[in-house]
Length: 640
Image (spheres, helix red, strand yellow):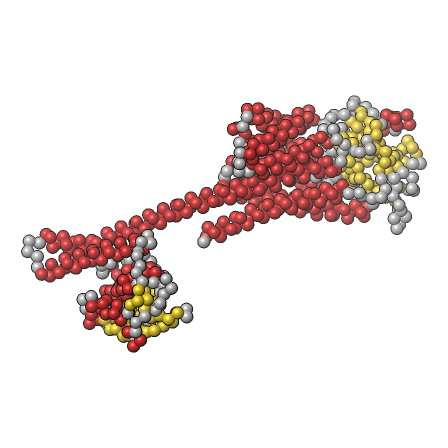
């Protein structure tokens, strides 16, 4: 029962984790949809970019009238990949309609949150050579941001309906991808609250999933679980960083740590991912070229961990991302092989790789500059990651159930072995104790040159006691093996009772009280088993009651569960053995503390109860009487 409850609780925890992962994916897709939604009716127009390889350009040089044609239009978004080149972006920001106070104000939102250094130059319409200069980026402490938000937000006020030309100088060691959004202030506040609620729920679910997996990892201590926990933890850190929450919530006054966090956590997730998938896919048993791919991914990423601190991150990531895509593609192929080979988890591993490929292709191609900058493509990586984690969680869930089933079988085998050992121990203890006295009597008789009549009588009694013990052990064994033949027929209870009393050595100690209707034929049962049951009850009463006391047997008609039958009560005064323990009286090998002065096996009442069940009857030990009383009920006609 305990195992069943524990197993049910484990299954409930497993379902909870899977449900949480599904919620993760839904919440992240909702956040992506929110981020990609149309913010306001006015637009950012004429987005164009100018590359500045040496970083020598200034706002004065690039804002000259003749430099306008040097900017290349990027109407679908900007992404230049991992490069050390400085980029200047130029766009036109239109004035919003005036609010109730006649003010025109726009909040300009810039993504992603891990850009290093951003400088905004907002042209003044009344003085074309004059600019309102703003600065942001993760190299500045979060506490110095103009608007406390996970990405970079600037307030831009318009004195009239004329548009503004805005220049942005972008310099970063992370991917040079930039996404712009404009907001009316109140709409931005409403959208930000909704977005933070979604992200809070999303990361809360991830953290709960991490804790649950951590508990199971400690419980089972399997290498695959430890590797998955490392992979899940590093991915969680990376997602926190790419969403700008490390700077906002954990390290608002430590920009240098924030600056390196995204880079280090991305490389760490590559290391842990290669480490995990190598074991999950059994890569060591795969083709040699596949083993080389996973080893290359693991060691290259491990060697590249110090790259952000050595200012070598752009060069390192340009090598790692293609190797990552090759690893995921080869992992997809390996998953298909496992699936076709009907390996457990092969289908889910394939699903995890397809999700990862979807996210990595969209994110990597954008971050490497092959696709234009878009929040949908950036969030695609996160959606793919959550989809992969969900598939892996389900795979580990099934593996967990398999482990639990194996542990349950092992526990059951151990429990059975212990029960068998305890059974043998109690059996040997019973034989040793109960046979010691009659064997010593027989030994004394055999050692006497001229045994007396009394000694001869004691020896015969000892032999009878040994026979009774052996007979009861054999009967108990046959009951447990379901090897007890039953012969059902019509018989008379009064005749069975008379036969039992005729075999008693002291029938004068038994007082029998029969209801008149007992002599009526009609009892349909197994007379041999019934004789054994009633005989054992009477023998016990005579053996454990005081010498020369009376044992009363009362037989009356009685209905039980709407079935007619006979109730037989066997009552005797309390003897030296005392009262038996009600909780253990029918237990195999149990004997009351004072009963060891009498020969016996501790099997009598156990046998009586087992045979009563075979006869479809009921046996009870009544504890509310002054005397010791056992009540037996037998149906007149049992349904065999």
